[in-house]
Length: 388
Image (cartoon, rainbow, N blue to C red; front, side, top):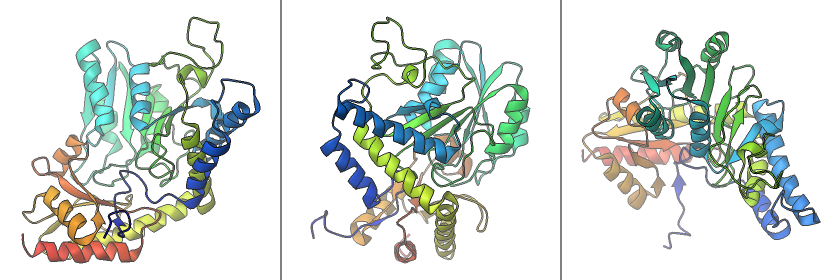
């Protein structure tokens, strides 16, 4: 059977959501057919219409994240760019940063780069082996020169949910900026930037927000003055030699992904209609079903929070002595199940979970996952476990 026509049980939503809702696909197509001009680079009707698409995406994101001014959202091509903008645009020589031991390499590598190049000091706060974080550990790590605290809202390995609001209250009280990596929580967990004390929020468009790849953004609190890390044409103040000060132009150089943003706006509207609460409840229930089924297999170890505890739809596991990459290969080729194996760009989290030497298999449910999909993975894991 042709790979494009064979049914795939897709359990890799933590990498990117699939399939996209039909309205997302239609929005992308419509933008490419009817609004193909460059937004902000002309006054003709097509350019104005393309600019309206970009504005509608910003407006929908602001509604979802409870952001007062949509222009405080800088649109990017992914979360990694957004995190680099926040980290490199804020930190200066001698600054101290507190981050967690479940951060993605999109946080860790920029921090390590700044450690090496300008002497930024970094403290990584440990979580427990299941990815839980005691806010008191963050408090204990704060120093007089701490400028930034970075928190991964949900671990992309363990599915644990970190206490952002509690940490936000702590950082606001002390005048320290809080950067939240919402790669695994945007569109899945409720996010209110003011209520949660978030100064900087980095998010992808293609995961929980159900938009196309090549979309994302960074919310920047109006009182946070980031230095832009990318300079160039903005379509505004073209006569000036320096980057404009006004938002969002200050942080958006070059042509944006208009068709992608049309799809992102459609994805966010889909979420607003379905509600984040309903989406989370569905994914939590499916994750519980998967955890319980895998845990019932004698030689399967399931990572992350205990059954019944809050978590996103990520369930990572190891089958006996099987190499996780081999397990993922068998699931794909023999069962038509798509998962991800390896170290998931988060070696610190693997160290916390005790899987630094082996990695793990990660299954992740999403908006389109069914109970039958979950049961198929459980049955396949049970069969595979007989050989390991």
